[in-house]
Amino acid sequence: MQGDSGNDEARTARHDSDDAEQLRQYARRSRAGGVVFKRIITPSPMFPTIKLGYEMKGFESSLVRMALLLWLCAAGCSLRTQLSDGLGVASPDGKLRVAVASAALPGHAYSEIIEKDFTVFIYKLGDVSPIYRKSYKIKSGNLEWRTQWISSNEVFIYLLDAAAPSPIRSLRYQVDSSGTVVELR
Image (tube, rainbow, N blue to C red; front, side):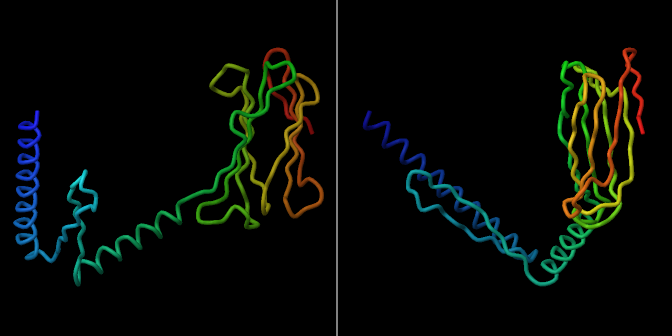
């Protein structure tokens, strides 16, 4: 047994020295390209791994920073803040559910007073595709909503602004026995 552990240690030491030599050769070749590699060895003797870190010099560094900045700006301008109530609220008899989603315009905070897309989905329970879908444009700051079932086939959705004392708008839907959805005014 003791002979085996000595062989393992010799093999590990030889493997570590081979890795270190390959790293030195790679670093020498890479210096010509402007990238300098540093060798960082973890302090744990049980896991003597070698990690590579690098520094860019001069013009390369400026190009990378500029590309990263442009990418962040472009990504930030195209993002939309979207809120939803997930799977929605089920009707009292459990046969229908109403789901709601709201989204701010790209490049704007959700709390800004701007026009937001507000969409209502009505599903038969167990179905993946909605039996009814309608989108609205609502100008509001922090748009919130409350869903309230009046009966097993009639639902109210109250649209609220966090800064306003009363609802901005209320939506009322009724589903008949054939599955047809009607917006009541």
